[in-house]
Picture 1 (cartoon, rainbow, N blue to C red):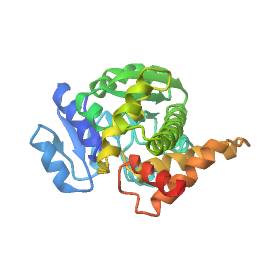
Picture 2 (picture 1 turned 135 degrees about the vertical axis):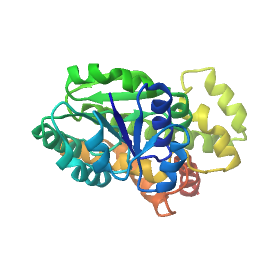
Picture 3 (picture 1 turned 30 degrees about the horizontal axis):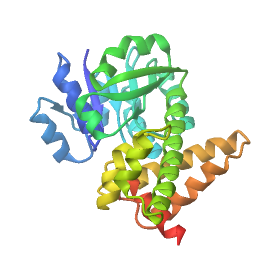
Length: 286
């Protein structure tokens, strides 16, 4: 089974590397930056000249690109080379509506598309221990699950097309709200003369322990906001979540609040790690 991978960014490079190491056949790779292709060719990847070439050469095509518009562009380029019995797995985090629309276009070509966004960050991607939420035809999912296992250790089938993405967006919105609770209470602890480490130790003894506090405390202490997962990426997901809520005719004040906080962080550029939101909370508290 020939596999192609499109998008060799912070996450995609690590994910593709795992496939290259674990799959028995050559893995075709493409990115808009040639240097990224060359770097993975040294690890055994087979460089392709375009996404179109990937579609023409491979049985399974995986994409991992930043936004809905990028996925749309990649799929438009591949469309003429799509054929029956191919499987397209988009692992990007995009608007579920866009993914569902693309899955219908892929279906018209006789191929099948799955949405399979990931959770956790680059260290887990490097270790092949991502969480993966899958939406689409269940039989197709079962047939390519072994490929997903090259990249992840927790793989959950969520339902029809768009279901994996819907779950990913809900997951990230929940993280954003947990993040805000941590940021506000950590800021208050500082004003009450409780140190960061003391605060985290005390929280760990009770019901408030959470992954965000455990993983980002050192980053916040050092104010070292080099991006592992950027403000820009989380802002995208938060806005998709708020749009989903509006489409359902619902209103959740907590979601609206984090959307406002991320808008403020985006005004500062959006390229820093999403834990930079702590600085926004400090600024607003004064």
